[in-house]
Image (cartoon, rainbow, N blue to C red; front, side, top):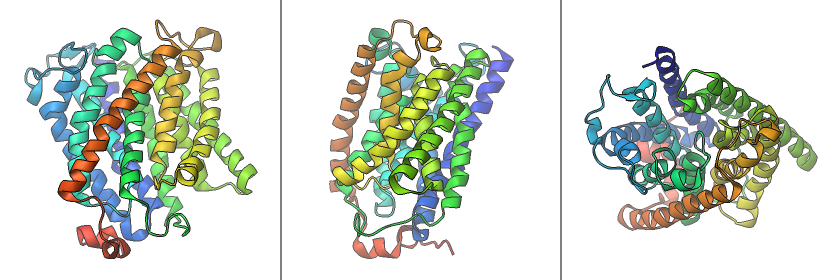
Length: 396
């Protein structure tokens, strides 16, 4: 055991948990109408609790127990055999479990942004629980747990461009499609009630991402330092690109645009943070700020899908973009750290496999739970707001 590595991973775990609680809750909460803010916080806290318990019961074992090509075993269910003296690399295995648990929390929580203001709470709870075991845990195993994408294609996904952002983004799109748009969309403008609240959440996300990407090195070393540096540079560059494009297209620089660009830059650098240098981070930030910005319009305008807070356009597109570009921007000739046996073809196959599997599981899961529990609240509850209708509380 290395004490410095252990201290860093425990710190990184706290940072990643902060990204969900309160970071993501504030970020999403500011973007909805005031009558739905409590529902956002309730969903985030409920998913955090549920994902944590399921992770120690089954999720961690399915993701990291054994070397099966498709799924892990049950040898570490209930964390049997995992104690202070068991190690993962140079850190105690309980620290690794905790760090990975925070990823299992934030991934389904990201999906919340697609269905705000109109979904049944019972569906959110049931879907998040089943999705975490049926989609998230297997994909983790394929890429980080010794599964076939890592062993056969040397997939680069340092901190979750595919594992976290692609799976969450595509699943968010599926739910938004079957759920239907908010009442009045797209003719009625539904502005965020508090851009300031969203900016506070965005700041916590930005700081927390140092743990998200830097912690994925699983050591307190130069690799972690470089991952944190390129993470920051990509986010900063994406803000500049997003805001500049907004000014060109709409004539105004908005706070919401700036913080959304920040998230796009962070999501895009995430899969490549372990191999990219500063030049590559600048490229990823620039491309994400432009492409994810345009993708927001494509989803809502061309596809007519009310992915309300742009989960697919920002996280899904960003994660896939970063994963596909990782072999290029990670090459030493472009200032990267080297890509080993990875290739663009291998990355493309990984993107397609993860995306295809996510859709294959998510679509019937949504349809089945819709038939069993219902998916959307009725019009009266939607008009009243989910805070009162679903939780009996009011935000002032």
